[in-house]
Structure formats: structure tokens, C-alpha cells
Amino acid sequence: MLRALQAARSLVSKGTRSRRLIIHTFGVCSAATMATVAEAKTATVKPGPVKLALCQILCGEDKKKNIETARSAVEGACANGAELVILPECWNSPYDTSAFPVYCEPIPSSAADLTEELNPSTSFLVNIAKDKKIWLIGGSIPEKDQDGNVYNTCIVVNPDGEIVTKHRKVHLFDIDVPGKITFKESDTLSPGNSSTTFKTPYGTIGVAICYDIRFPELSMLMRSQGASLLVFPGAFNMTTGPAHWELLQRARAVDNQCFVAAVSPARNPESSYQAWGHSTVVSPWGKVLATTEHQPATVYAEVNLSDVEEVRQGIPVSKQKRGDLYALNG
Image (cartoon, rainbow, N blue to C red):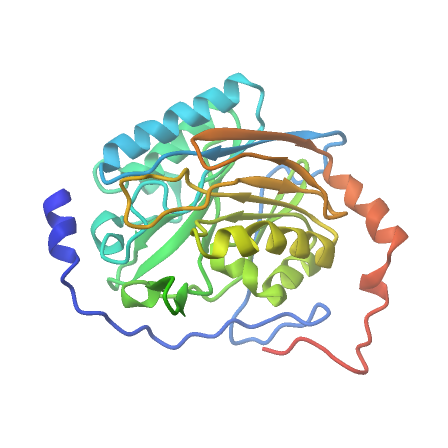
């Protein structure tokens, strides 16, 4: 694996195919691309709080070790009563464009098609969710499709061990901040082209990945599909993290009157990419409910997703939009 990673670092950058995200406007969607709206078998809202666990784990170059680190974190969260567990972005791989094609694996649509050999990371997620009877938002891993495209992908697994939905990162992290950081995910990744929400007994949850949080239209779309919690596995860095990580979470929470949970890897001093850490849960009022620093940690928060209704009724912005002046268009 390490030799392959070293070889991959010399790959020539590849371009990405042109794709389009169609934004729903007031319940109407273009036929060109439908948003992903996955519905679990048990969709009735369960009154009362759900205990979240955000697993901020250390990720390195040993894929098997990364899986075992994630396993230990999930088991620890379950031992502390967590019902919805969330992993960070790229938890099975270094966050490096040359690593994505090396650490990627296929992700089948059904858990029945998994094998430990071909799908070790996804198999782990499915098996531990089923064993612990939890909802598991599996952060993200590099995914390779049948055409050889590589995506930054999050899967969601329910307590029955079923893959409920899959989100491919829509907005690729291509930035150049002079003198600070240059990164171009599109060198080796392809973008997804759909939004993702899914229903749970606690309420509807939306999932997007890291750079997706900078695009408010995507969060607005998930809110329009009923989301009361927006989850962002992400790996902001030492330039963008201090400036924007918490700011963007609070902005998306207030914009959409939703809870927001953002989960980062822990900062690895041996990594070429230094993650900011600071996994955080924010209320619909924009208040930070729980957070941490940059070391390995698990952040816990009990949230009642039905609380969003009080905020939305008190400040009814969704009913006060001026459709005669503006609208979201695909």
C-alpha cells in the first residue's frame, strides 16, 4: 500500500468530467438530475433526544490500522450510549490527491454484495452498525466506480446493517491561497451530482462533505427536503479552519434553522495535510453545543430534532421568501 502510494504521487493530474447539480426550487426539480432522497424502513419520528457521537480520529497511511482506529472509536461511542455515530472525512486514507486512487474501493448499493477483500472499509461500517444497532454516518472514503472514476463518498448505514444512502462530494476542494495552501481534489477525484437526505426515527438528516458546506444552496436544498440536521464530515486545514470552520457551521445552522454537526479527523503531525480538527455540533439558533480541540476525541451531544420547529415558527423565514424576486435555479 505504501509503495503504491509513493508511486501514485507522480501521477499526472486528470481533468474531471462536466457534471451538473440540479437545485430544487420550492419542490420542483428538473428531470435532468434527481436529488438523492433515501428513506429508511422506520421513518416515524421518535420523540425525545438522540445522542450524537462525532469521532475525531487520527488517520494515517496504514489502511488496516485506520479501520481498527475507527472501530475502537465507534465501539467507545456505543459504550457511552451513542445512537447516531459519525466518522470524519477520508478516515481510511491520507487526505492527499495521490492517495485517493490508491486507497479507493468500490461501494456497492447493497450490503449483500460486500466482500472483506474488495470492500474492507464499507464492510466494517455495515458490520459494526448492525452489531451495535446504531445509525452510522460513515464519514467519507475514496470510492472507485465501475468506470474507474474516484469519488469522495459517504455512506449511511442503519441499525439493520443496510446501506441507506450514499453521498458523493459535490463540490471539489480546488483552492489556491497564495503563500498558504494549494490543493486540487479534481486532480484525481470526480464530483458527485446529487444532494442527499435520509429519514430516521429521529427526523430527516442531510449529508454533505467538507467543501460542500461553503455552498449555501446545497444546504437550502436539504432543508427543503425536510432535513432538521445537516452533517458535514470535513477536513478543513490550518488556513481555512481557524477562519471559517465554525463560522460556516453556524451560518448553515442559522440559514436553515437546522442542527449542524461537522466531524474532522484529528490533526496528524506526520501528515503533509494538517487537519484543523475541532469537531462541533451547532444548534438551529447558531449556538455551539459541543466541540473539541485538534487531538483524537469523541464529541457527544444530545439533540432533539423536533426543536427546529420552535425556531422555524418563531422566525418563519421559509414562509417569507420572495419568490417574485429570487429563486434557486439549476
